[in-house]
Amino acid sequence: MVNEQAEPVRIERDGAVAIVTVDRPKALNALSAEVLRALIAAFAELTDDGAAVRGVILTGEGGRAFIAGADIRAMSELSADDATELARLGHEAAAAIEAFPAPVIAAVDGFALGGGLEIALACDLIYATDSSAFGQPEVHLGLIPGFGGTVRLPRLVGPARARELIYTGRRIDVDEAVAAGLVAKRFPDRASLLAGARETIDAVAANSWSAVALAKRVLTDAAGTPTERASALEIEGFGDAFRTEDMREGVAAFLEKREPRFGA
Ligand code: DAK
Image (cartoon, rainbow, N blue to C red):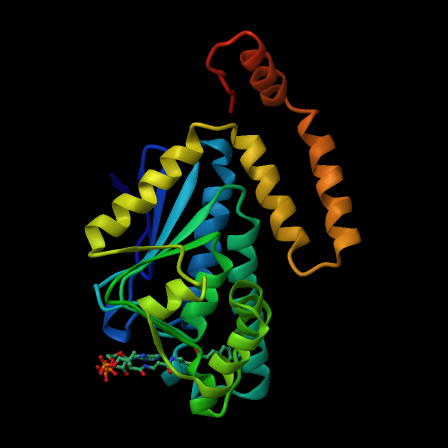
């Protein structure tokens, strides 16, 4: 593995898997503007690598937190204009994850709170260790979610549960997060969490990169849109698949009873 980037966000590569780590363990990986900018830069760098990256594991350093929210200390000094800029940056970071053309798995080991949960919600999947905890505690601070929680949490757990979590600000454990559909898979410890995320990315990597990227684009763009618009996006994406070499190869391989040899 090669460490290519200095703090506060590191990128490590292991074959076709990239591990992006928020590295501010003393502040439980809280999201300052600097961390958000580094996250945006990390996903831009990985996007430039195209099909060389088949999936990203996003995690937090230190074993206590994925990300414990927006940086409350830095937030306490913000003007209204600064706060708007921070919210814009947070949304930009979430959008960079959603636009990334391969699956991003949030590997949560510890607290995923406030802005931290919102960044996890922008990922394709959330995997977590048994000792993790989740919540949108902004109302405890006189705030509301600012990095997409009111948008993405209801999509994943349903509107009633999202409202209950956002209005009470209460923390939930892994049992409840799995039952709510927030966490897709749970693991006993960090090592098995990272291995499980890698296993999923390896399974994805056996498929056509362009088909997976197309599926992600359609799923992301269609989220929350009315059925007619979502259907139009799928129809368009299905047509786009027919413009790829991988589609020709995948279908030919099936008909010739052999394994496909997908390109980039
Ligand atoms: N920001 C800054 N520092 C944090 C932090 C945070 N969110 N969370 C923890 N830390 C720091 C603590 O201050 C402490 O630093 P020192 O005192 O050692 O210097 C260190 O991390 C360890 O934390 P604790 O000593 O508190 O550790 P415990 O195990 O006792 O407790 C905890 C862990 C996660 C339960 C606790 O730290 C906690 O409640 N943290 C705050 C969690 C939280 O409320 N997070 C949500 C923040 S609200 C907006 C955009 C977005 C948002 C809002 C506005 N605008 C555009 C303005 C989103 C807001 C949020 O995310």
